Amino acid sequence: MSIRPRLVANNDAAPEVPLEERMYLEIYDAIMEHRLPAGTKLAEQTLAEIYGVARHPVRKVLSRLAADGLVDLEPNRGAFIASPSEQEAHDMFDLRQTLEGRVVQQAAQAGEAADFKRLRAMIARERDAYMQGNRPQWIRLSAEFHIELAKLSGNTLVVDLLRRLVSRSTLLLSTPEASGHQPCSFDEHLAVVEALEQKDEALAQERMMRHLDQCACRMSDGTSRRFDLRAALGRAGNKPVGNS
Image 1 (cartoon, rainbow, N blue to C red):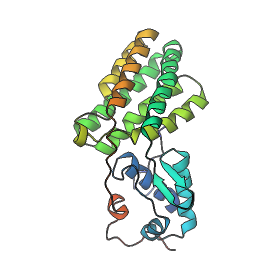
Image 2: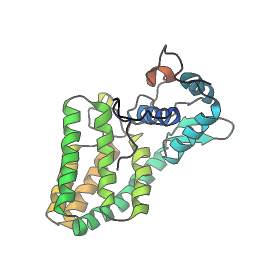
Image 3: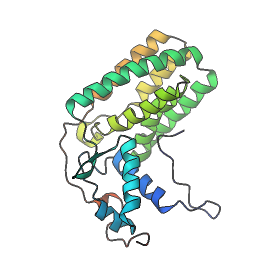
């Protein structure tokens, strides 16, 4: 299960994705791919005009994104892409270390060969996406690795909490163009899986802690720029996609 559902490939047999769902997916991807930076205001009226809908479905989409941890809803101000403070960033990575340390311990105990094979396949796709310059897929697979690993713990509460933490902390990571680093290294992921295959709990925990430390070091400096919503959503100069 991915962090968010994917749009179905366009073919005659594929059902059309409802407009509200498509709006959610497109904004979700624009945030996760850093096309819209932390702190960007998601104006209801502007989004309604872009998608040709009333403001009610826009509010529903923004509420879903807030539940994902990607958007903050501020009374009397509106919706903004989450911009965690330095303290929150520290707290999130501290909590992730606690949770994911326990996750790898349980994965080492309960994980089977088929599980590790699936994780290796995901890491291979992550590496391929990076090598091909497919930044959107690369970022998504990098984040999804942590969720798939958490599922091996068998604890759905941990999975749900990590999904929110991973999504929100991804907002803090520098773009590779700005930092020269990968947002979340596939080599580090592979090192964790190799330790799990050996059933070495201590080594798996050590490698996961080191990996999360590296992720924290890749955080951006908080500098943000103003982005045009239409351009970021790939709809600059386009007509609305629905009827209001």
